[in-house]
Length: 142
Image (cartoon, rainbow, N blue to C red; front, side):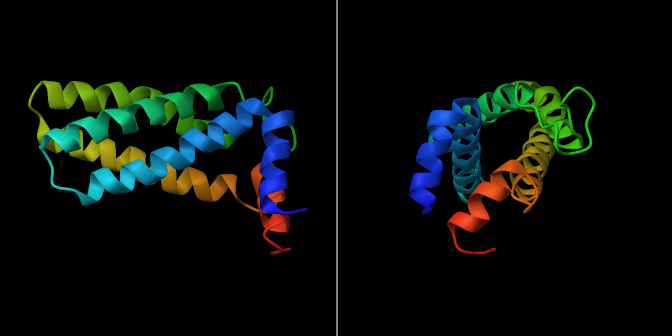
């Protein structure tokens, strides 16, 4: 099975997980753009809002995804801590910049990018996890 057929199958069989994956990858890419560009510009603010929407959408979707294969309580696994991290810090990061606290804004947003995009993404793609079991064989890496 190729990667494209695997992801088409994912869309059909698990649309919530597909949505979560698309918004998470979007947040990773847009977040990279926001981090690399000059801060405080109109484009930084515009791309920043896109990132906020993607992160918020990813967090909401992840709140409804359950994994009964990993250690869990009612399907909620340790990776759901990243959902709580984003749910708590995303509005704080916006609030900080709205009130002129650039340093706190930068810390909150970088923390969510590193924790919510990079670290959570690594955990999500581990070979034993659902997306890892989908991705690695599709890429011929098993």
